[in-house]
Image (cartoon, rainbow, N blue to C red; front, side):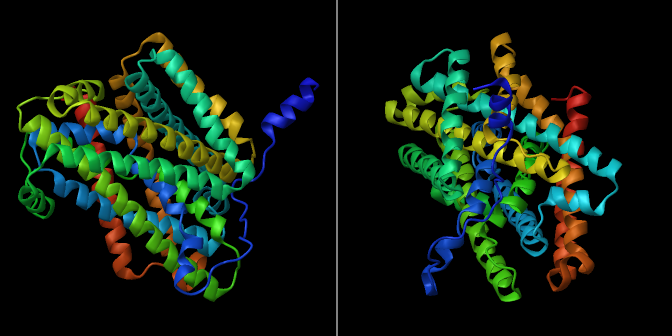
Length: 429
């Protein structure tokens, strides 16, 4: 193979958004299962390794008191992800493609740059999480664990050549594993269900817990998830008729409710386990590694193994979806198609450098959160502006009350992210 042929093989690749219609779409009550899947890819971003730190800190420091924050976060996520899916269904374009179409070229390039930075920052944290999972579970040193992570992610991405649905099945399997592991964790921890129910619906916050609460909400809607949902929903866009799009939007809403509520359950389970095990025993936990080590003497080897398996699955699945999101961003803004393999190879290099240099993982996670916080307004605001315009969305344009809710969500998320940045730069964190 000549160097030119090798280059073309690596760079060229199939369009990841090409809808592949099933040979037979089920009818009646089973029809919904043909449309399920895109939101489960998106839900991975709500249970990635970046969320583990805030959930564990919330439970170990404040018990069950911040469970209501997760409920609020989940409601906002469902709204904004539904708008992203609707934009993809109605226009047949991703959020990135809509930005390229409706904004000037300089503005579109600026938005691409910010979105690309956010995707790479997110991908860095997720890749580190998967490597940490291999390190904890198999005692593999971090750098070889990072290389093994790259191989595992390549294998999952290679399923795309057998059909996009195969990637969804792989992600669904990883998400299911995470859920099962945390069912085991909650069962072993014997939590106080009365307190769980109370604090899920009754808000309580004070000066000490507000920073953790901001972290929980501020990390809820990540830019790459919005771009991802507006793209992967088009793998179900098998027809252009009004009736079909109406059905697809209804099914995508149900898909989002199932998937994002599942992510809410897993995040809540993290807080519940941390509260029942660490808070009740007066053990403050400062890192994921420390949480794993502490579980063994408190709950036994089964609990610590379930914890490590869930972390590994979280890192692998979120790393895969992060790569897909990056593909959608560059393809939408610049009309450049590169293979998923090349995308993964490029974006894993910063993580390998960070791990090789021994940079503190917590500092890397904080830096990634700062990058996401800066970019978030440049994703949410265009999403709301596009979905509210009748000239773009037609009869699917947001109703007035949806716009109000969307503006409130955007104001809360952006405001809290700005406050989070203020805390970081003033040294109060």
